[in-house]
Image (cartoon, rainbow, N blue to C red; front, side, top):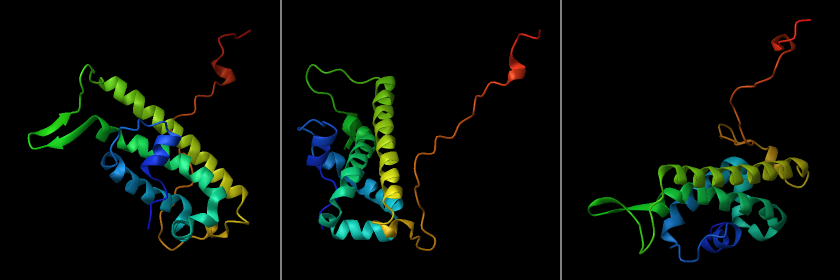
Length: 166
């Protein structure tokens, strides 16, 4: 069966260079399929995967998230690859290697874009739960991704923190 997303989709959605080889994204595509199963649930994923033509409206939300998530996951494989001598950087003529900061920026950008699309996908599924009844079905023991978990601290300012005591 074909994947829900392919290299051509990555090139269209994320403007990935057409010279990128399919082997560089193959593992990331497989990883994102596992994540898609967690987002849609096993039942929903099985239905969408076996009959994608029946879910064109859903795929309009699913594919952009998958594409940006693949780009985020595959970034290290774009930059380096294992050879006989160990890990080597892939640097063409006249090109300069990315610094750690540049790599982190690229990864953060792809992550932000994938999280935004995941949020839209989950909102779409919640708004259309009557159409996608399988979304609320939970197979026992399955792990589900319900959306972005921002975590962190809440930095609210209390009135008592004001300097004016008058």
